[in-house]
Length: 435
Image (cartoon, rainbow, N blue to C red; front, side, top):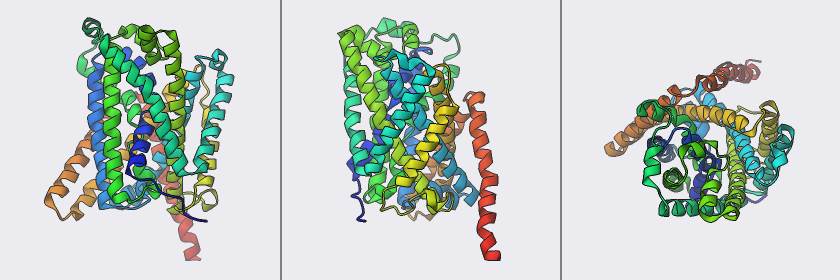
């Protein structure tokens, strides 16, 4: 079987930005409406933190080039048990977070099919979306990347429209009146906003995880990581400021489609409906991109002995068909197990758990970069790597410390289980040799 064509820096950047600019950009303005304009500082802080984490992955791609970074970074740089923990956290967060993205797509569809708001009907639609997008991933990485790029443009169109119209009709007095609607100190509010905002930045490592399908990863992965985060940050901050300058914070907080409401107020109901269609399309593109990335992380784990090879395609030059099928089955089970009275409640629970697991991976990779930086012969590069790693480490730990404890508990349980599982894998691998 011939090797599939690999993707270059442009498509890799699109993959990163496309995976980030997904459901978060459409839903988070409503969450931030419950806080007010002060949430802008949370967006700025998360943008800076995300850039530092992207810098970690960019430098890791230079000092430790390879196709299985998500496993080998923490395993080689810290300890093998943390390599398994890093892979397991990323893999689990992938198929948990993917369900949240699928729920967002169905949520946008409820604008036109109200019956999908019923739990069982919404569940059936969510599972259908998951399997349809899995088909795109099985078709090949270039098709998936192009789907991400196409839906990125579709998804950005209404956001650009809402942002442009919002700034043209920006009400400074309204923005000021909605600055902080919580009654709590600004600093405390900003810290509490970090975890939900970080959902919008997940995916910044997409190109690094999918290194097997990226051409010349030593050069192209840093471009994709930093470029994708920078693009997404500009879109996020501008769009949220514009929304808060058009609608009162209380109205945004009640909205189930905040950008559709902004556009609808300024350009009519029909324009708002178009926004809902574009949002649904973008969420589907994001789901396809993350499904590919999660499948590639499963392939990397199987190559390292963390998964049975019977359920994975360990050859990076072959399409990860078995990996895709495995994770969509797991995603289906997660959708069934997390069924809630409303799509919003189910989405919030799954997305926040995914954020904590992602942050754990980022912490381990930052520690690995500190260790690997000693191998850089250029003093400037060596200290730059260490500074970036420390900044990323501090940001991730701060965000985890300020998270809702009811969300961090199940995430830390997943991390804790990885230690005995890793020991069991090691013991099982030694038995044949002893015999």
